[in-house]
Image (cartoon, rainbow, N blue to C red; front, side, top):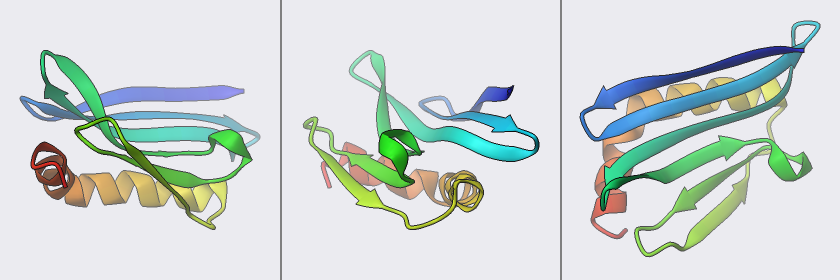
Length: 101
């Protein structure tokens, strides 16, 4: 099992955390999330992952609520989508989170 894990700073108060495991070149599980520094700690804003046996996205609200949506993508497709989506839209997700939307 090969593990890939890293954190990419996006700004002083935002970062992307990437984790995935692969076996024989195929993604076995993954988690990619946007974290924002708020109230003296890193808070998850949006997380793509494969826990619970399916690919999905969890969107967190500033008040602690969470909305889960199934992605209907393969592990590999969902991992690629997650990386690209956070790379392209992290500022929007951060803004919505901090505004309570």
